[in-house]
Image (cartoon, rainbow, N blue to C red; front, side):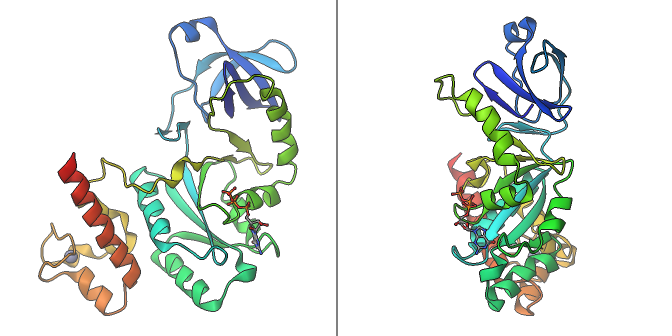
Length: 286
Ligand SMILES: Nc1nc2c(ncn2[C@@H]2O[C@H](COP(=O)(O)OP(=O)(O)OP(=O)(O)O)[C@@H](O)[C@H]2O)c(=O)[nH]1
Ligand SMILES: [Zn+2]
């Protein structure tokens, strides 16, 4: 199910988008079909159907509400706008906490300077899946596309970094396909905005939602968990003197040592400390 509008559900099947309603019993039970749900429907004619059943969800995100999401694609622009490393690290933490794989697309490579590219490369060294892309020169697009196949991907990133441009260049026909649904959808005058999954020609689905740009860390993220969400810390923190080490000012802290030796990027560590303080403040006020 790609998108919902009022009591219509748009389902992709057999290279087509079907306009479906819910079977009466689901409506009575108030079963919520959300974007990303796998459904079983009965054809009514060549364009319409009735949803009979919802398959169990493998994963479920709440805000935005999307089922079966497997990964987060964070788009960062290397220039205009410059990268916001704090936001990037925040989104990486958010993704990891939600059990999503994170991909990073450093976009606008055609405009980038070497210093910014080398900072961005740090994320590759840490072990994240990183792409350097340009919509202008089409650099890096094949690699990115091959990671979107058969996955449901949530897009995140500041306004103007090139999210729409990337999607459009990966699938130039998408605007047309989406246009077809949107025209139908605009017939109703409802204002509720549901998440929409965009079907790429490579077979992947992408969520065009601003919902994953939350600036606050999740309330259920505990201070002890944060250090496991920074892979470069997680790998070596067993060497800290205390197993409960939060890498702040404890004696015998391997992480602090690694930062001083230049083996862990200083800004990553600083962001870790900033987030840690935020979490501690949140814990106190709830
Ligand atoms: N030079 C260059 N410009 C790009 C590239 N990608 C996108 N742009 C430009 O950057 C601007 C913003 O791109 P969008 O795709 O609208 O950005 P967005 O992330 O979708 O922005 P919102 O819709 O506001 O969230 C546009 O003028 C694009 O043409 C790129 O790789 N290189
Ligand atoms: Zn430590």
